[in-house]
Image (cartoon, rainbow, N blue to C red; front, side, top):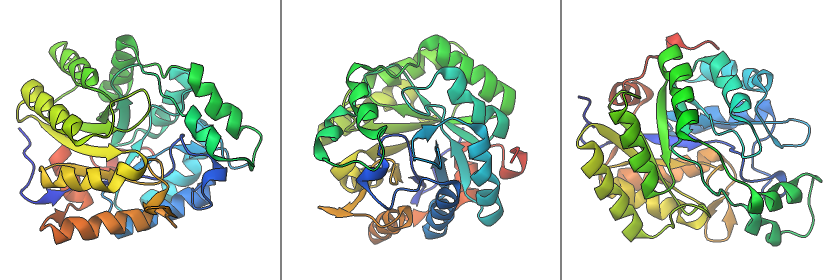
Amino acid sequence: MAKKKSNKVIITCAVTGSIHTPTMSDALPLTPDEIAQQAIAAAEAGAAILHLHARDPKDGRPTPDPKVFMEFLPRIKQNCDAVVNITTGGGITMTVEERLAAPLLASPEMCSLNMGSMNFALHPLADRYDNWKHDWEKPYLLGTKDGIFRNTFSDIEKIYRLLGEGHGVKFEHECYDVGHLYNLAHCLDSGLFRPPVFLQLIFGVLGGIGSDVDNLMFMKRTADKLFGDDYQWSVLAAGRAQMPFATQAAIMGGNVRVGLEDSLFIGRGKLATSNAEQVAKIRRILEELGHEIATPAEAREMLGLKGGDMVKF
């Protein structure tokens, strides 16, 4: 059984995602070159894991195209030792097959995996802007009012069979609500996934559980009840709750995730200039609290990963 080392905290950085659009921040990396540069800088700032999506370099919209992923994955690997974690969520308009195309080609050490279908709603963001850089942005956001992010039990099993069994991938189990923890427990009971599992407890996305500290406590107690000591856990919170929730998670013995996928800000009303700026901020907070930052090698040991030499990029 893998145990969390005392005082070692894994920092994950989610570099670009599929939530925010180009109009919202000039710092959001969109091209393969920008994604590579910001990912490498985040690793240098202390991120042991880099969670990666791809964007169409022409207009910044989310893309599942493996060719775009392969324009930045090798460069990241060549320039840092961080664990590369590729999304299987992609974007809410993508099919499961599209979402799996890049990770099946790249065979990374880790992939994210949403632990259930949900209303993943971004439409309130559309009301915050009057002028848009690209025509696709506002309709994309508004479309989420009538959209469902799909990850059925069949989808989850398919992703595990293809990537877990097929490629030795370990998963960042993204849990947007308490029911997602029970979904994972059911999967483990059914013989899917191998402990220790890595939970990413997510707060503040409309359609999921809210960013209330009582909810964090409840999610953690539920995880303890369902998984005992056989799990690692991390926390991310959307928007303004990002840093406070990461700090609270670390105080409780957890790991943390930051990055421009989850929040575009570095402080109240102040846009972050880069992913590395967010990583550096949470690192300062963690070290002031007496924690040590896990290296990529330590993160690999804690999570039982196959190793950076076993990927295909």
